[in-house]
Image (cartoon, rainbow, N blue to C red; front, side, top):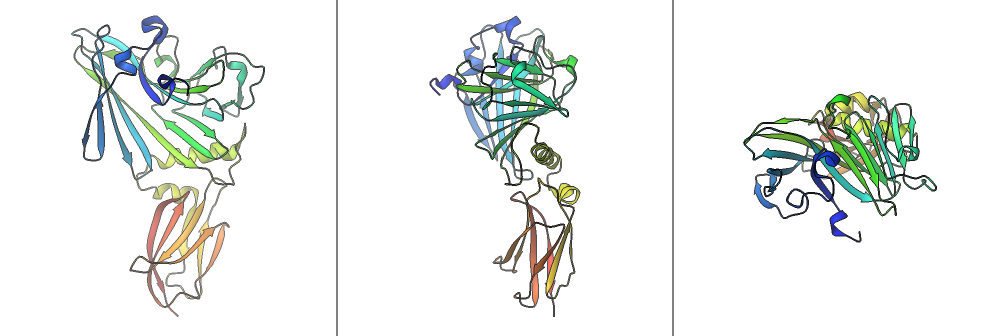
Length: 330
């Protein structure tokens, strides 16, 4: 970007127009934070803003269970008296690609409504096809997530608390998307509930980020059911740290027979957004066989595998989600 202030992701207090307007409060936006690493977490501590007496903390860490990055934002009210704010994450991406989210209650508003399309409960914004359409921003109640795809297969998902329509800050919304007039960049914005923070107290709000390379089977276009199914699948896995529940619900059902002789079968209820493979390892961890699962009743030839005990691993969209002991006996 031409300005480093307009790159990356930041965190603001909401609402904007009725309180701090523009530009953002430096201590809460782009001034340096102190950092500290504890275990697998890095904590950033901001400085207190002189006007509003707010201090922000950001704690970031990886969740290997669902391969997400978790960001915990804390708003500390350093005043002795109560204040009312909502948390607001603003993530900037290049002004291209496809944005989508599940629509909540009410209508999509703002001067950029003409750039959006609502199809089967989802709101779509195609930044590569907005010629002649005016406006800079739209607002909408959502259902706790916002996704963006660039370069045809690079998927970014933000997951956050789904708030009721009436819990949004004044003149704000759970989901907001802004694009500059020159289309240089777009802001993917999500907000939490508007509520009071007692004097010397704080509130914490959590956001999850997911990044995925989309399988070739996922169609990236406005109204694509395979894309929204894929996104919903990623979000469902985020509730189960092991991912096993979603593998059973969405993809592989069972591996049999066990012991096996010449063939192994992977029985699935595959859907288009599942990219499943099976890998067989010996007990020393060496890869013996790897095969994609592309059918509902996949036959895997194991005639070249010697008698003995092995470990099989099922992968969903590149993530190891289920494993077990496999015996080969003839």
